[in-house]
Amino acid sequence: MPHARLPSNAKRRGLAAAVALFAGLTLLPAHPAVSQESETDLIWAQFQADRTSLYNKLAPPFVDCFKRRDSAIDPLSPIFHGCIDWHSAVHAAYSHHALYRHTGAYAYLDLVEQQIAPHGVSLIPAEYYYEQAKAPNFPLTENPYGFGWFLILARERELATGRRDFREMADFAADQLVSWFQTRATNNDARSFILNTAHPNYSWSLINLDVWARYTNDPELLKAVRDASAPLFSTELDRSCPAARDAGTRPGFMPACLMRLAAVAHIWGDHVRDWVVARL
Image (cartoon, rainbow, N blue to C red; front, side, top):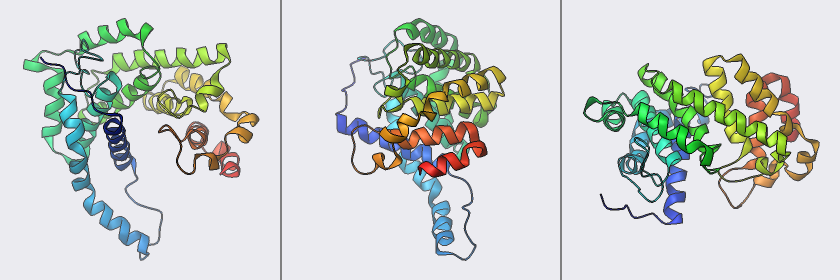
C-alpha cells in the first residue's frame, strides 16, 4: 500500500479541533440548568434539535483517516494505524463508537468493527501484543496522552456495545499511566507537565485515569489518582498558573491552568468547591 501523505500542521490542528468539538458535543449534558422560558433555553432546544446533524458533519475527517495506513508513524499497529499516529487513530475509534451510541447509526460502528475484526477474525490480541511491545519506547504523545485516550475509547465501547473486549488493553494502559505519574513524583518534575500545553499535559491525562477508575470502581486506582493529584494543589501554581493565563492566543492546545482546576474538581468534587471557585 502506498504511503499516505502526511497532512500539514494546519490540517492536523483542524482535525484535533474537530475531535475536541465532537467530544464536547457527546459529553454535554442533556438539559441546561436554566429556566424553561429563558432565551438560553430556546437556544439549547435548537442545539439539541441540530445535534445529530452536527455529529454527522464532524464525522468525515475521522471516518476517512481511521481506515488509512499511515506507514510513516505506526504501520505495524494491527488496528490503530490511521490518522497519522496511534493516539489519533484511537480517538477516531472513540468517535465512531460515540456516533453510534448517540445517533443509532450502525454504519459508524460497522466501519470500526471491520477494522477490529476483518473477515470476522479479531485483531485485538495482536493489538494488545503491539501495545505491550511498544510501551517502553512510547513517546509522550502516547504515554500519557494516547493511553489516556485509550481509556476513554474502552469505556465508550463498553457503553455503546456492551462488549468488554478492550478491557485487558485498557487495564494495561491504566497501569502505564500510573507508572508515568509515579515517575513524575520520583523525578519531581510534575510542575513542568502541569504547565504543558500539548499532549503530555498532566491534568488532562489524570482526568481520564480518574474517569476509568470511577467507571471500573477500582479502589486502588482511585487512590493512585488521588495521590497523583497532590502536585496540583501547589501554592506556587497559584502564582505561576492563574486561570487568566489561558486567555487569548497561546501556543499548544491544552489550557493548562484551567485543566489544573478541572482535574482537581473532577477528582475531589464538592470537597474542593471553595478552593476551585477562589481560583476562578
